[in-house]
Image 1 (tube, rainbow, N blue to C red):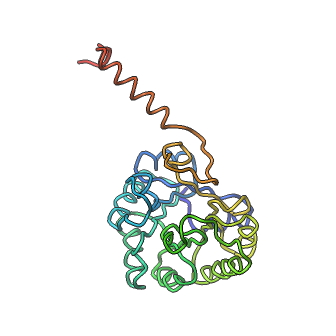
Image 2: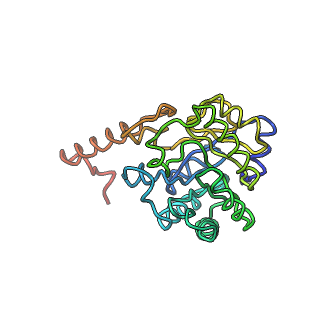
Image 3: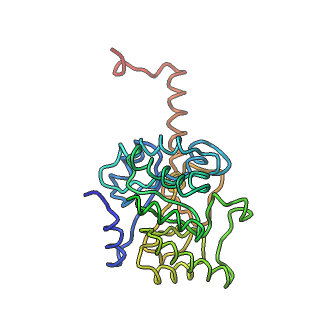
Amino acid sequence: MKVTINDFLKKKQEGRKITMLTAYDYPFAQIVDEADIDAILVGDSLAMVVQGLENTLPVTMDEMIYHTKMVSRGVKNAMVIGDMPYLSYHLSIDDAVRNAGRFIKEAGAHAVKIEGSREVAEKVEAMTKAEIPVMAHIGLTPQAIHRMGGYKVQGRTEEAAKRLVEDAKILQDAGAFSLILEAIPAGLAAQITKDLSIPTIGIGAGPHCDGQVLVIHDVLGLFERFVPKFVKRYANLKDDALKAIKQYKEEVEKGLFPGKEHSF
């Protein structure tokens, strides 16, 4: 059964956790979907973990559409959410709706994600009116790293925490169907989760959110440049891949591969 917005809301109402991971291509999308994960975010994090860039800012709309198409082909049940990249929604409401619509119309996504607080509320409202489901994203918003001065926990002061609570309610009122909370204190995330009727998805926001999301390359041990505190590695596929590739190299050099069973 295809996961829908109603399933998200129902899980919150029933106190069941929502699961979410990133994926950026067909084979990983298939694996995540087969694991019965609720939603796949085609994150602009692909700029770092797939393209090898320093941050998420350079990735383009066309690149995001390309990767979202691949993910959509690999999914049967999970909700696919396209991540709106830097400058795809910042300049105007028209840009925001047009680019969000590309994720739905061209790439087969079921929803989009947009970073930002109250300043993007009008765009969330306009996208929702255009029949585009929107997941909002507050707290640490990686597209704003230069303004924020780096990847820092947000909402530590009383004033900053109050503003995040207000932002969450504004985005809910604008029509967002769920809200990602990134790198904020667990107590603050618990308060926001309690105050909202829409589900919250945490990443570095403690255990009290309605669901959790992580980058799949972090979960599987495929990205080593840095490992955030909130990441738990469930495998180390880099080591397994390196071992296999070294064995292949050795067998080719020694004439062990291909053998008779691999030849015609």
